[in-house]
Length: 156
Image (cartoon, rainbow, N blue to C red; front, side, top):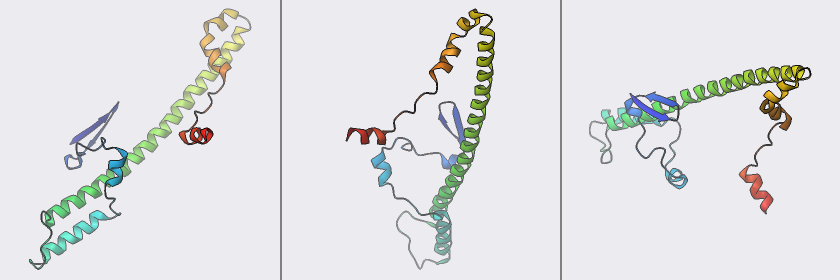
């Protein structure tokens, strides 16, 4: 099995799907130059491999292309598609977990803030002790950072 690591995440996939060394290191222009295969490429590779095997030598495939190589590259293309679909499901699950964890923390800190304010009315030292908490609530939500598109529009 091949491991792909980034930060605190490790994804384990079949050795046959280990990314080539250049994957993840290509620039935008290099990515744009890669031929984009249509959906179902694996199925057509498999079907074409069958025809090559049954052709009995009537058709000579291009140099370096065999029924086995077609089948292998088609299978690899389909298998990595499935890995990406699985990762999208995992990513969605993690995004929802993030929302739930953030909501839990937000609820707890709001309750604590309310308690600090209530007790601070009778014991002002508590307000001093929890100044970072009170400052956090006093500043309000942070404004959204401008997107590059909006920033570019304002400069023209």
